[in-house]
Length: 238
Length: 101
Image (cartoon, chains in turn orange, cyan):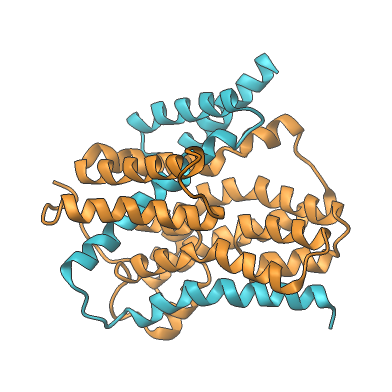
């Protein structure tokens, strides 16, 4: 465990924390307003730690859906992390023990994965356990703190600010993607293909559309697949 | 134990397992170069798919999301400071809502 890497991870994770807080507050408010117990909301953020699926689950619970339905929907929505875990497994220092890997796995979200993946990409350096732990811990803490605030204190942010902050994580993704787009044509082609694929699945009526989770998995695979075929050899950062 | 608590624990299990299996099992695997390449493209494809079209619906209205997104792209072209990019995106959509809604 290297302290400097851990601190670096926490610092890098601050934008994620900033984006998580308003969304987690909204999650806490929704949970309380649907009449579910504080314990349910707190436990969900502590043990599931996956934004969209938590909102959907609270919604299904308030509608009185069957347990199996709620758990299956959660599985489908969150299965995209499987792909992210596979990608991240290749970026982690090879000597990282299995126990450490299984701890880090819990913290894989769209945001921690994306941020970790673009870190140290230029010099092709592997990621350390300490760095990822710091990154994930600050994100996890913000997610849970926000949940508590929403549950017990309600909306402390003015509506207009809460609305505007809904864009936070998306523009963070933009901030992660734009420098990579500028540095590499293959990356630009891959990212734009995935955007187009996701738009096509969403908007074109005769293209079958599934749950959000599967739509993201499919579009991601289309983009990465095309990149693999079109650019079999080139260095990602020429 | 309360049924809702059991559901939450079930959710935790089915969320954790797909997160954990590749991370733990693919450590020692010798992967074909084209698979490695596919995996190295995943982050950027995922970013694209995560951003669009969902960003359009991330605030009160599509125009306010577009203003925030546009401002963030503009700042991201010149700076890698994520906090600054995030704040400019929030500011853009906040300003739109303040002025036009």
